Each structure stands twice: as C-alpha cells, then as structure tokens.
Image 1 (cartoon, helix red, strand yellow):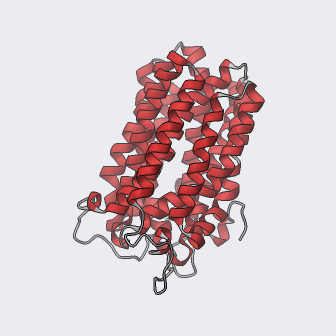
Image 2 (cartoon, rainbow, N blue to C red):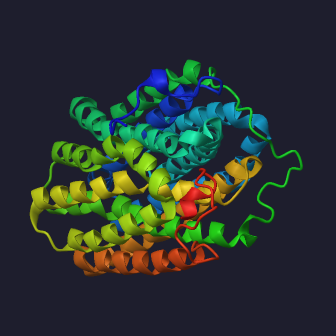
Length: 408
C-alpha cells in the first residue's frame, strides 16, 4: 500500500461511483481555505484587524459550516450528494469573491462564513460517497479523501505566497475564485452512490442516542480543539517571531505535507488493526507533542515540531471518521458525518476564539498547554464511550469486517 496521495485512475471501485470528482473538489476548496489562513497576518497588518478580530472572522467560518453540516448533510443520505457537491463549490466561489472585495472586518466575517457554509455542504456529501462506495477498502478511501483534502491545504500556502508577492492578497483571492470556477465541469461529473438511502427521512433523529457514536464525537472534538487553536494562533505566532509572508507559506506547506503523504497508509492500518485503538494511540501521542508548540524557540523549530506532529496526524486522523462510520448503517452515513462535521466545527470555533483571547492575554506557551489538557480530557471520555461492551479487544467469532473492526 503506497503512502502517497492516490492516483485519480484508482479513485473508485470497479462498479461503484467514481470518487475522483469528490477528491478534486475538496482539494480545490481546501486550497482556498489555506490561502485564507496564510493571509491572516497580511490582513491584520494591512487592514488593521486585531487578534480578536481575526479570531472572530475564523469563528464565523466555523459557525457557518456547523449550520451547513446539520442542515445539509441529511440530504446526501437521500440521494443528493452530487448536487450538494456542486452547490458547495459555487458557494465557495462566492465567498472567495467577497474576500477579494472586502475592506472592513464584517466583510471578511461574511466571506469566511459563506466559505464555511460551502465546506459544510460539500464535505459530508463527499464523505458519504467515499464511505459507502467500497466498504472493503473503507480505511484506504477515507485516507485518500484526507490526502486530497489536506493536499489542497499544503498547496494553498505556496499559491498564496506567490500571488501575494505579485499582486497582494486581493489578487490571491481572485485567482482562487477563478481556479475553483474551473472545477465546475468536474463537479457536474460526480456520480450518485448506489448504497441504501434514508427513505424514512430520519436525518439526525436518534443519532445522539448511540453511545459509541457519542464517544467517536469526543475523539473528533479532541482533534479539532487543536485545529482551532492552530488556525487562530500558529500564523500569528510565526509572524511575531519574524517570519515573512513567504516563510509563512513555506512553513505552513512543509508543516502540513506529511498528512497527505501518510494518510492513505494510515487509513489502511487503522482498518487492519482497529480504528479505536489507532485513534486513541495516535491522538494520545500528539497531545503530548502539542505542549512543545509553546516551548520551542524560533521559526525553524516551530516548523519542525509542526512537521513531526503532522506525521502523527497523517497516520492517525483517518481513524476518527472510521469510528463515526462504524457506529451507523449505510443509510445514515451522511447524517452521522454531518453531525461529526458540526462537532468538529463547534470545537474548532470555540477553540479558535478562546485561543485568540488566551494568546493575546498570556502568550503562546499558556495557550498550547491549555489546548493539550483539553485534548486529553476529551480523548479520555471518547476512549471510555467507544470501548466495546464486552471490553475485549478481540474475541473468537467476532467478524473483522469494516463495520465491526474499527471498535476492536
């Protein structure tokens, strides 16, 4: 099994929907999001936004994606995943145009919110299709989706750095809007999956009563407490340490590069050895590493610790959506993934705003220690709730199919 990003020609099973359009759209939208993140310091310096203002703009994007994940995701379980993918892409283009035109803080809050709603619409639709298309390769396909998703996040900063040097942040947003528009023909080639649909239109009803699904959400929340802090603090801290816009872009790309390289292999290993075990082990290790974000000095050391952390993330993060997937049947996959996205984004939004305040008041060491403690508490709760009822890791007679195996 290769640990590199997947080739488009191997994107789907022989008789299932082609996954390539879903991979490409998430790649493009993630690249756009990365451009927004890497230019936060530029917006602060040129437009006079405060750290709290930056945190509010980030939080508005998380909040909008939260709403979209709850409202839109159930429609993918009813056979509407391809239209949702197209709608998400169109909204992303609109959001990027608003960011290119904006001058005031509220302009960027609205633009970031629209872009967040776009991500919350397209994401669950893509996840459902990838999960149900080929259950025998669930881990690999989730890892590949993550590879394309994070691959966009790796490419975005380099794109932003080059365009920002040529014509400033406005040119960057305009070019990204145009690039996303070029993906529209790909979006119209997205195919519907043939798995069971939510014909009873249950949507989110009853999902929160599933114990191990709740446990999976706690694990997911632990991941996104970190991501919210990272988005709110990392670029600003790099800037305060003297990093230029080019150094920020290179540093962010290098820091994120291990995730798309290792996530397909990580997903396959999680399916082989059990996603619960894999998620808890990898996230427990990364929680310790997070503390060092606030300890290491200088720009190079911060990039190095971020890269080391990203290697662990690459191997570990496909396990979290596998935990969620294993807790529900095929006709509830998008609803569960949408609810997972809402948990991700609520955790990220609260973390982003709180981290911005803690960072402004107490500095980077305190904010990263608080983040690590929060992650550890959430992970412990998730580990308890996802534990198999018999409390046995493996026992004779228990099938090791993708539905049961993630909870071994």
